[in-house]
Length: 559
Ligand SMILES: [Zn+2]
Image (cartoon, rainbow, N blue to C red):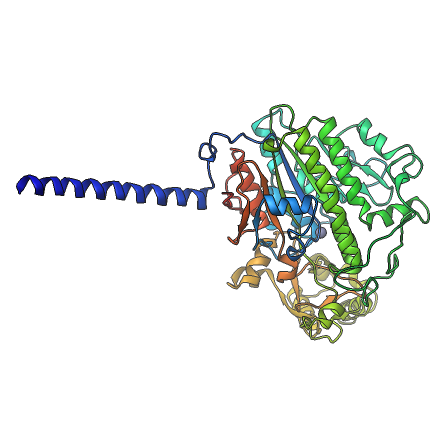
């Protein structure tokens, strides 16, 4: 009896201990996967650190436009990648520069210093473009403008990579300078973008002293004669849309409303502008991305390299015709096709197991109000969903003039608007003997009386309010660069005469696709909370890189 009892006690003890150890180990590994990501060793013996990371940022791509029905690269990423089906922006000012800046910095626009596409420089009372630089040594090739990442106050994944391994190479190519520059960071080897005035791919002296020969050859001596533009058809023809008829009310008419939009009509500047607002700018961007991988031997030298690709046509076309237009459908189908070719090229050149792709967007967009109305989704108090730009701006500046700068002073010297923010010139207000607080109070009352405006926010209100909208504005707030008032529109309202736009804190502007694809990443769909600001932190972990402390992004589970 006694022996049996002792044996039972020992067995029970062992069982409990083993069970406890199993429970502990299991819960620790769950904890590790959920909160810490998986470390390199736990990814298994077949895991090989990627030699190339490709960040694909598709401008203005709403989350609901990406699905597995695509037959090319987009479809492949959705089917074979890890899809974060609830991904969002975690900031309120949903425009291009902030949206691109968060992806590879791992910080919200507020910390990154990117208040909007532009901000008001309080020192000289000028509107300042987010990637502008006063230093003429950072001049753009062939232009009388300067570009650099100097306004970006934080580092990027590319900077961390190069800091970790001096052999790592970092490149970016895109349709827009602000997209390519903010994705690339401060120490990139090459950053190229389409110049919609010159019709060439260009860069700034910040990065290189001379445009590489293969970029110059791509441009040609005259882009229309022997450069990439010479390969274009006379006009952009496309199929009719599956969502709605090709010509729909509310579409912008400046480049025509139906298939056959002009491409090669007019002088070089007009051609450049038309190409910029067509799918072809993305085709050329992806062709150039292929050349960069080949010529710079990205992913083929043992070190880990980064290539950021910013596809802009979804945005330029989307603004004109809306996200559900025949034109937008054709633009995304074109991305799908060219991305398919690009991924197939990477399979052969780098090897399927050696590269990782992340796909996301800088922001979404509102539907055309006319389309939203027809489908019962327009909630804007203004019946058409639109407020004309001219009328709105006239009322705004007439108010400032009649109330504060009458009779001899320019109202624009007292108050400026940039990216849904209003800045008051304190020095000028003082000169005029005006109280800044009184000006702000007056402007609020004037703006909040408009149908299309929900409310305005002061920085103090953003700081003290504990609601979600205030948190989003807080994440966009840059001390010294953001305005004195943030304008929150009514949902689904636009201050725009035709076409559509984005920039609000509402879900249609903030819901974005987010897909991770490649070795060490488990395919499938997950609805965990995910933001574009989590991309850099997640990639840093996957690559075993040390990222700076105090990032806003968290590590997303890739397995
Ligand atoms: Zn954008």
